[in-house]
Image (cartoon, rainbow, N blue to C red; front, top):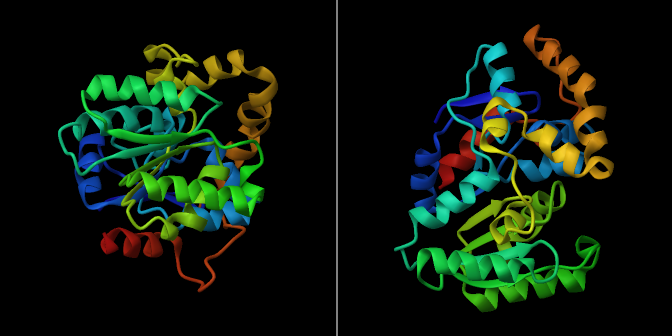
Length: 268
């Protein structure tokens, strides 16, 4: 599988259709964007969590432009909010694919569950839960979340609690959910599915301006993510372009990130 390096991560150069097809065999999917890449420069736990992903697909039109600048073009942008609806439509008739929705505010996941099941005309989403604030620091709550998923019998977990929480939670607990074969880290997608939050106009997403729309909608929460990291990010990209970039972290065994990711994909 074609993979490209962006800073201390790799991106699998797949189309949406190719990704949907390989998920038939299982796997963990993360969707890197600029925010994720910058968090991986500062947060070693997040960097390590990212290493469990079998597939990492581009969630940013800006990264499409950056990859082209670096001479390693990405074939398609696949955001979590595009991947998830494509996933349940692609597998709508496959009764072995059942989904547990985890995330969003109280009641939102339940609404999303109802709407998705109406769309696919079967009980594809078999469970949902909105964990409380700070759940990631409460072992008892995390165990209760795991138990909910296991009792549901779901084979797919779609976790939307934001980065880095969702990726780190999957990395820590996925082995305790033996029935689940597909893990999707999907950010705000549950809100989009429920209709409680509106996505940006499609044209803004296509030209790489979705971040502007989200910044206007949530300036207090997102200004630092979108504006504070802009200059440091482009500085790091220039370093990579001239082969001066060095990751602040390494894998525990010292193995190269790209080679390690290749072994994970081959496992599935």
